[in-house]
Amino acid sequence: MTRCNVQEEYTMTEGAQIFLLPVSTSSDSKETMSPATSKCQESSQFSDRLKFEKQQEEAEWESINVLLMAHGLKPLFLVKRTDLKDLIVFDKQSSQRMRQNLKVLMEETACQQSMIQELIESNQQLKNELQVEQSRAAHQEQRANDLEQVMESVKSKIGELEDGSLNRVCQQQNKIKDLQKEQKMLQAKCQHYKKKRVEQQEIITALQNDVYRLRKEEEERVITQNQVFSYLCKRVPHSVLDRQLLCLIDYYESKFRKLNAERRYREDGSQSEEEKEYRSMDFSPSYKGLLMSLQNQLKESKSKIDALLSEKLNLQKDLESRPTQHELRLYKQQVKKLEKALKKNVK
Image 1 (tube, rainbow, N blue to C red):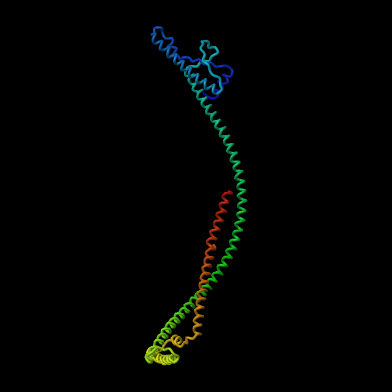
Image 2: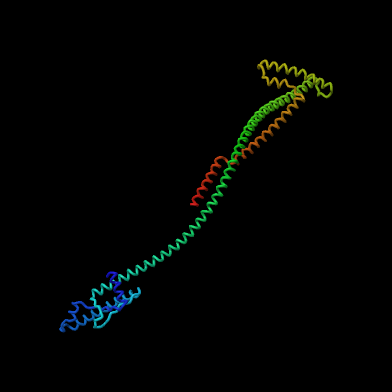
């Protein structure tokens, strides 16, 4: 059944109610008009079957009426009468096809209504989503404007920081150059003082050896004087005359030692100039003062060397605490990454 036919039937139901009366087929009529000779049992079974089919068909039409009323249409009625002047009669097959067509039509109508309802709901949902997206777009636009302002301020700050960092780097490089020059000068001074200290240490060691040697010689000289005096006088010296005698003994002993030394030098060869200088020195009070002044100079040089070393360590610490070119490069890379992130947020 097409939609045009359905619409025509609907218009007919608007004007007047249509009464459908199922009619049995030709075979059924033949059976009902069978001769009276059929058995009672067969006739009762036949009547029961007809009654069951009629009830089943009425139930199907009731379900169709339920669908029609659910869609706001008027129901169809089954009329039990023999006057067929105002009625249209269908056979069973036509009635069944009509019921099937009405069911299909109602199902399609229900599907269309549900689809229309879903479309209405989806349309409303899209409107709500559109409003949400519009508000979100406005919020994002406001946020983008805020981020642009922040980016501008950050760019200005970055420019200021770059200028300041470049100035600081230039100043630090100049300071580093000056400190490197000072370090080289201090290293040269340190090497000079170390060399001088080594020389003075060698002189002090030689002087200490000479003092030890002279002390030993003095002790040996006193022992020799006492031995010679005790050998000659058979007693211990205690008077002024005894001291004069000791001086005389010392004079001859020194002459004797000098002769022995000359003899050894001739045997061993010429001695070094340094040994001659040390042996020709007169250990007078002026020479002792020279030794004291040398010791004082040595102490002063040690203190100066220690001060220079501490100053060198302080300069090294100062150089290590200052930022290097690598650290400045890393700082610039971080600034570029921040600009990229701000551009992405703006987009």
